[in-house]
Length: 119
Image (cartoon, rainbow, N blue to C red; front, side, top):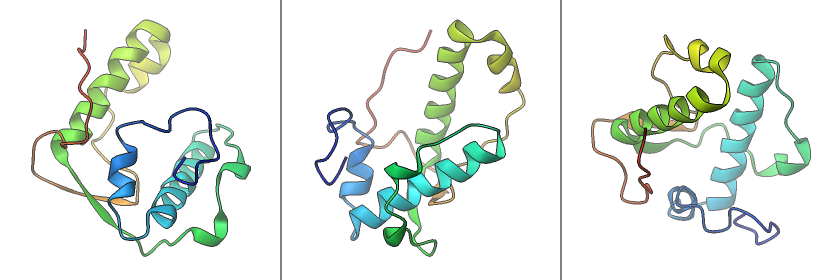
């Protein structure tokens, strides 16, 4: 994504979160590492080739607003309500949380957040 090796998601708004970090490649690879870990815990597979493990730095933390996290969960639940009733129901009591890369602060949706209408 940030290295220019992908065809999709090169302009995804969330990439601004990583591009603005002092070490963007470490940030995105650390994010993907945590996505892989969480996915594994939930029984999902994740392509290891997408992660440059030498760039993963578990000491990295970056901030994201609680408004962005809340919006992301609402958007996910909206998509799941149409795609998978079972997965939608599994998220009903999901605790608010974030990828381990992030720490949250009280605030609105991030400036880089692309807002879609949620049904």
